[in-house]
Length: 105
Image (cartoon, rainbow, N blue to C red; front, side, top):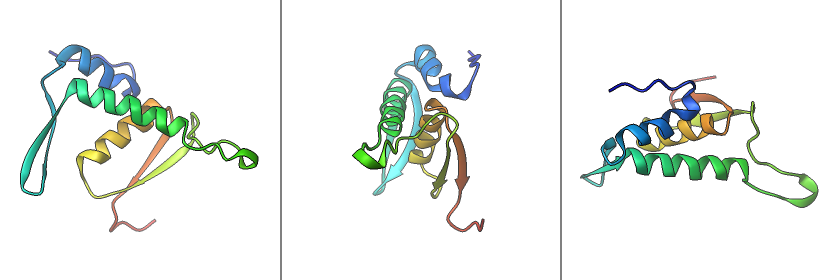
């Protein structure tokens, strides 16, 4: 089965509809393997994207949330959280600028 996602922003949602409880991500932490289903991934992406949009309201400083079209940097080693962050940024309609810690600008 393939997924015809019109945008990366909808990819997690459509994958959850198509694959639900099947394994989307596997990662090892403290020597133990963990799995995240497509349904769990979508819930996490949606929650993260909502959090990015609603980050902080600091009164006079205004809303510091991520707005559509904002450029957001991801500085991270390769990990499952990077995937979650990348999909959430797409869901929030921002532009991702990934960097590995050893890369120079």
